[in-house]
Amino acid sequence: MDMLRQFCLTFSTVLVLAACNSSDPTEPTDDNSAPVVINSIADNTYYVDELFEYDANLASDVFSDADGDQLSFSVDISPATSEILIIDGIVTGEVSEAKTFAVTVVATDPDGLSTSDTFDLIFELNFAPTLDNANSNQEYYVGNDFSYDLTLGGTAFTEGNGDTLSYEVVLVPASSEISILNGVLSGIVSEEQIYTASITATDETGLAAVDSIELSFITNEAPVLEVPNGDQTYYTGSTFSYDMTLDGTAFSEANNDSLSYDVTLTPASSEILIVNGMLSGSVSNEQVYTATITAIDETGLTATDSIELKFVENIAPILVNGNEDRTYYTGSNFTYDVTLGGTAFTEVNGAVLSYSVELLPVSSDITIINGLLSGSVSQPSVYTVTVTAADETALTATDTFELSFVANIPPMVTNNNSNQEYYVGNAFSYDATI
Image (cartoon, rainbow, N blue to C red; front, side, top):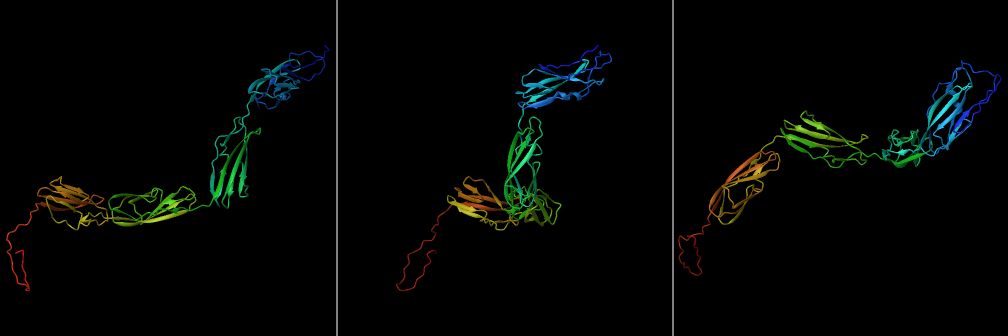
């Protein structure tokens, strides 16, 4: 049968793409195979308010026809929208809100057999990059290598649409000593200077975010000994502990570097433990050590301090000036220092002595403060006074004496003097005490 095979495609929301062609009139045969999908169309994502274009004519890579027939294509979009146009097989437009459309591409052979593939046309909001982890100001030493990544390993900025970010860094003032590559600053700066470094993160559509820091280069100052340690003396056999850093105040660091400490002991001793500038332990024999502490900053600059660490035998206080027995009158105010002005006892090790006084029998008439006895006793009595001098390790020495209070009896005339007579001009002598 002679007939003209013509495929004329019309559009409403459906576009039929075809080339109108003529061929020899033949009837469809039962051997004709329908087209098949060989490469599914991937979903396509575009930004809201961005002009987009999808060419359905490229669908020939999606479908295959076993008979080698030339295929025609039609496109259907759901839901329908006036913001998307279909012109000559090209889907284009600008969508004003975030939305997803189902796009169906139908492939038809000349005998009308067809197949289809559907994919999503996704429109999402375009988000600008966001500064999530702001860089902090950085400080480096003049003459030292430095390197700083303004992207913070890619974590400084985020991109809500998953776009790849590109980075641009501007340095003010410019410097030939500082290299900039992919957001990383590096180099050696030869003199003190403060730079402003600004990094701009830009997404694939040109939206951007910015972060800025100060980059300071300063002279590296060595640590300084501010508070020297004094020589220390401890007793053999006693546990001791001494902090040569003076709780971190011994040394200062002008650049605010963290300091580390190294302590050496001469001669070395297995009885003394050294940890972070702290000496501790218990030394069994008398010995004098030299302890040297070195404070080290982050760049290896140092300062030192040395002391003598003495370990001596602990000797108890010694009574060198014993108190004599004391007598006072009843009814009269008295005061007496049982320490004899601190000279009654001596302490060979130089320790400070503390004093305690025991009075027997106890008397409310007598006050005892810091080894000083005072008061006024109303009745004749005798007290035993015991003075104890104790050093800082509780070793002691004692002294005991008697404190007597007696009645004050006025003198009595036992032999009266008689009247005496002498010659004028003559020497005389008379003992009135008889």
